[in-house]
Image 1 (cartoon, rainbow, N blue to C red):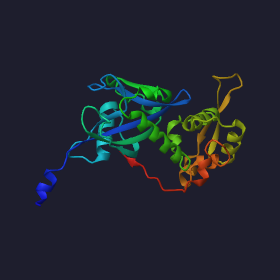
Image 2: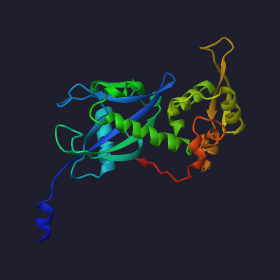
Image 3: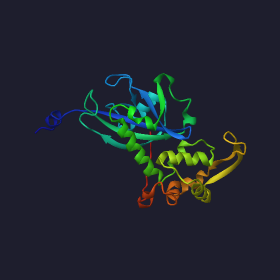
Image 4: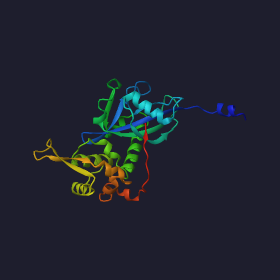
Length: 253
């Protein structure tokens, strides 16, 4: 059979990218969504997605789609998986490749396009998402938890200075579990990766809580992530000890 005939008789599908963008707002992880502009499911809550063009690879498509819909550029995103159920999109046969990224909301607040009808939603609203986007979110969170057990990726979500309560709230939000305050603080302070500032946050109490910053030189010089050490002394992620350390590289999109 001639090569042209072989390719010519094969079925053709649309390829899409969907981006799960997570931020830490008001002591909880939230998801960046937008209202779908077209049918089917017009007006529904959607992950940030679009189709791949002929002249770009899948990573380039994810970068372009994210920038077009949100204004966000040069965001580090991790590819999650592909979704190809026949009936996943009632409009057409579409194969979707998903990515997730963690952003510091404060850093990008002025970059988001106001005309895009973007909305940060709590993860407990995930059932409002269209198509199979709830499953995409669940898979991204699962991957996030595994990566966070080995690598300091959660640091992307915090402001430059933060309290220990904010740090604990971040990881409780990631894992969906309540951690023992005393054990968490003892372990994190004993690791030598935080620097305490003289400044205090007095919004929650008159006494106030000291602000901290990460010693980034120490953090990024280690092969293991901070949460691997925390997980070893907490019960919220018992699988951490069984995970083999791997070199997870991020694609700069």
